[in-house]
Image 1 (cartoon, rainbow, N blue to C red):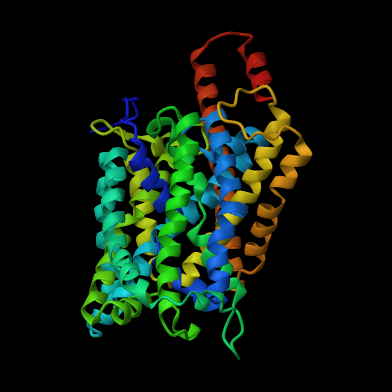
Image 2 (image 1 turned 135 degrees about the horizontal axis):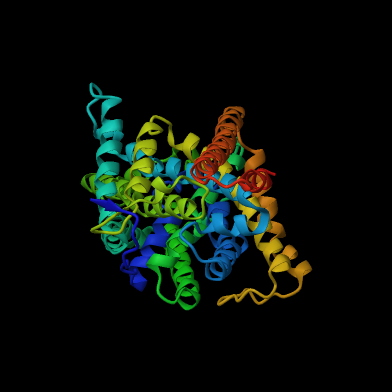
Amino acid sequence: MFSTAKIKSKSLSFIPLVFLIYFQVSGGPYGTESIVGSGGPFFAILGFLLFPVIWSTPEALVTAELATAFPGNGGFVIWTHQAFGPFWGFLVGFWKFLSAVINLSSYPVLCIDYIDPILPTSFSPLPHYLVISVSTMLLSVLNFIGLPTVGYAAISLGVLSYLPFLVISVFAIPKIDPSKWAVLGQKGRKKEWPLFFNSLFWNLNCWDNVSTLVVEGVKQPSKTLPKAFLSAGLLTCLTSLIPMLAATGSMSLDLDDWVDGFYTVVAEKIVGKRFKKWVRIGAFYLALVCISPMSSCSYQLSGMAEIGLLPKLFGVRSKRFNTPWLGIMIPTVISVLVSYMNFRHVTSLVNVLNSLGMLVEFSAFIWLRVKFPGVERPFKIPITRLRWLIAALFIPFGFLVYVICVGTKIIYLVIVVLTAVGIIWYFCMKIFQATMWLDFIHAVKKLADYEDFGGYYERILK
């Protein structure tokens, strides 16, 4: 039923590609309440205006250049491998894969924050696992069918999940008082900057994930990717900002109320009691949107297998759909297993893991400009001097270091343990591969009855 043979895959159309990128980066308005609660309306709005410029744009531009200059299903793994060798390529792939698969569970976990009040308490925590398991399994099937199916599903689910916020925003217009947007905080309440930046980072990050889909999913990537990034960036900012402006400008403000799931209360106060159930239904549709990151995960594993950083088994494909079935199954299982974590812990762990990978990716970008200046770059950031490139990435570098530094002790412990497991896996795999190679040479030596073969064999070993 399955094969590693190459079968031509169907590429994504432009609109499905935009929505696929959008849901790899953002969850829409869902999960943005804590940004308001931790920083206040003014800084929340300012964050969604400035952060796309100082963070999302550099990450998207770097991704567009490297994905077209060093194309492959491994995406960022290939860039790092080219720059710093197989070990760093594997480690970045390991960090980013863990970040992505743990992030897969964040959408269903976030959904729980919205629908928990309507679940019978006698079930808890069974409904958490039921929602997460059913939605994740369903979406693994869509990924198995192929990227075009995932893209069109992302459009449908995205529109359905956002419709309640569009209604809220329209109903809020007559009640809006723009002066409320300038509120810096609340008297006697300290700002929670780590939570503020972690939540903002989670909502505007992971633009590089699409790099694993470029070879098989994007036509003319040098032209299509920049346009898709720009469109997805505008969509991300507008879909988060519009409901935030409507809600903060039309309601009395108590920052303690602004936690994940608060938009159900906003819906009730602005539109009506019955309407909050539509926000909850939208949250359920959002839980299904983890199809987008799952696609990137599966093709990343396939790409790592293609360049020898994982066993070839990880690249095995379905004969009918040409999708990496094992690469789909692994993220599915892991995301269900980590679904017991709460949303804040998930986003913090995801952000630190992703930041570690991005630090190496940005370093690889700079070093590849030095190491391979003559490589054709179909899309190239129009900065030629190395010092200006470093200066352009100075703020993103600084922000990544900040995100890593504000992690908790338990997050650091988990990452150290996971990284150790990854490093052990890498060297065990290398030893196993070397052992298989030596066994092959021994077999050839035994079959070949040449007098001087021993000297040739010793030279190979040396």
